[in-house]
Length: 113
Figure: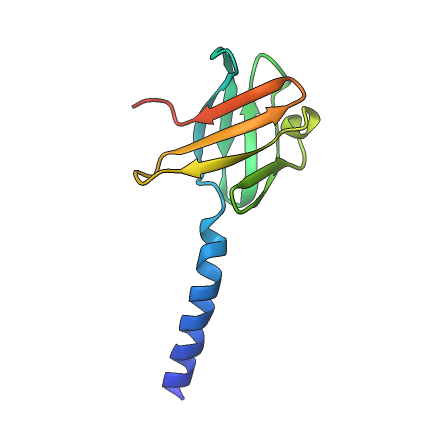
């Protein structure tokens, strides 16, 4: 009985781990426009909740959806500017977001230490 339970738990973990690992890591990301000018600060929390502070658009909170590396703003100020894009996390754990919005391209990354 214990072997069967362990086997089932191992299969469940193996099948769900990649899906869990696909969501962008929480953090505070500095965002710039396509010209490199400051666009705002994205504070990303678990489960896709975010806070966005900017002088370009009204500050607010909302929800992001993620499927694999793709990200779409569902609600809040980022949804108002039709934010869609993707993210990549390198071998060092650094994540970079590349977005398209109704205001142009936006890139968000952890600020240099």
